[in-house]
Amino acid sequence: MSTPKKPATEQVKQAAADVAEQAKIAASTVAKDAADAARGQADAAKSSMADEVSGVASALRTAADELRSGSPQERTFGQIAEGLADASDAMREKDLGELVRDVTTFARRNPMVFLGGALLIGFAATRFAKASSEPETASLPAPDQYSNMHGDV
Image (cartoon, rainbow, N blue to C red; front, side, top):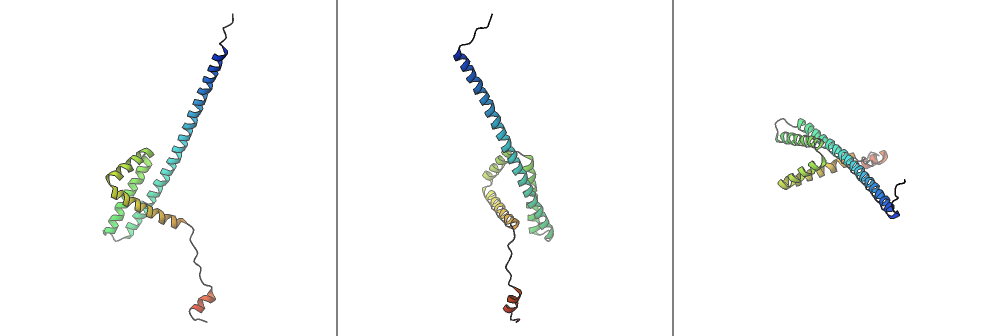
């Protein structure tokens, strides 16, 4: 005996349900892959930022070492360097969501300190960007023009 055949409409409904399920699985896979890629990019940016902060902390430590021992500037630079080193370590250890929550909480509790820090970071980033760009070559006068300017003719 043969098994009874499903009506054509049932077969079409089943095929449509199968296609919908496959599309749902494919969309879920694509969304997961996109989220993983975004997370990877965020982690790379976070790591790069932690490296930059660590570099600034190191530069501040070097500057503090060059100042007169025990001076207010030396102590201030040393404290800022330690704070930045701690921030760099925190960036490496926490995920992006935790960092955003921590920064938001800090900004709400200490708005003036947050704005001042943001200003300093912006200033430092601008200086870093300018220092990293190609140096402009100053146009020096030709040797014969130089001697004429000083009356050495």
